[in-house]
Image (cartoon, rainbow, N blue to C red):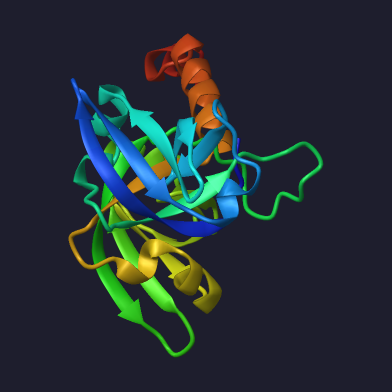
Length: 212
């Protein structure tokens, strides 16, 4: 589990095909402090398992399932990626609960420079709209952000200068793909409400029959 507070920007050092998967070697500094083989690390919003730790880099093996659901397949050597180590018991939870399980990929529609911040508009498949609420939480490439505006097939987030400076958002442009993870609380709530609706025997005919 993660918080969506990015610790540092890593750089893709090497990309090697492995059957239907890809092995990535990523340069890092801060995250290497206590990183061990077998640890979980959030890379651009996707939880990956560390398989090799070197002096200045670490390695993960990305399987086909992850490649199909994330923007990992677009990574090239030299690209900057957001990194966060897993949450430890007792740590402050400054963002929101992020599992590192990417739901879908969104597309940046617009990046607007404001006086003291940036506004980023991102489109998403409309079936995920039920998980979004104004001023709710969302993870974009692993970054915990607050929804400023929600529409049918896109949403906007306001990026403070600090987040702009310490994440890879500053390197994004219109048309780029970003990994989206919707708030787990919203997903569970939507499922429970959906089940209750399905299980209910109350319908328009039932209401008419009973005088409503």
